[in-house]
Picture 1 (tube, rainbow, N blue to C red):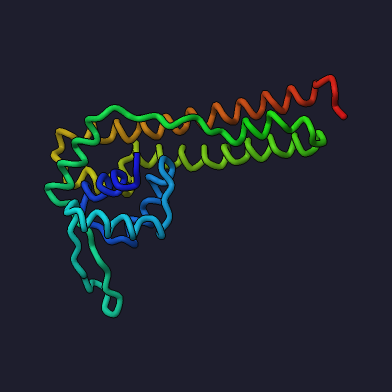
Picture 2 (picture 1 turned 30 degrees about the vertical axis):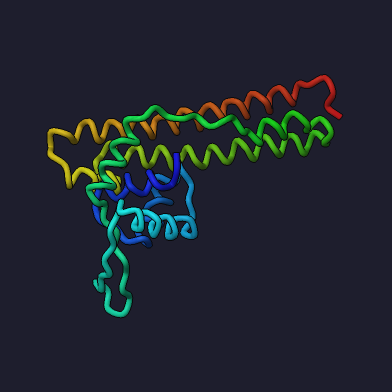
Length: 195
């Protein structure tokens, strides 16, 4: 996947400024695909040069004009084509497990802290995911509200269901990482070589 398709997907909801795209990216899609402002703006310009989006300058806020991007028919067609393709899974690159393979050279306190940090990271993510899932189910998650506003009511169940399924996948991953870290910490406490 590339940032290109994430942006086309966002713009399939409604015309949006680059600033708002970057902000919303961090609030919703950022949990699935990270991108910074410095990546988003150049990609929007590329999409415009390819005819996949158009942009207009708006002056809704006097003194602070902003460029709003809108998906073109060509951009919508390219998004639909990409959505129909099977996912290309990237090769596994798990720095966490690679580091763990070689932590036998570190003091036990370092190993314990490493595993505890891993657990806390996923506990923090889990809290955010669960909050967002509740918002989706209550129909108040901002990106979902915008998505539903532009679609027929007959499609709302499918749209909401797909967003919920994606978030449930993140929740399951976070819970699995927490359980793994807890198992590893318990094993470490009972290890033969406590150093």
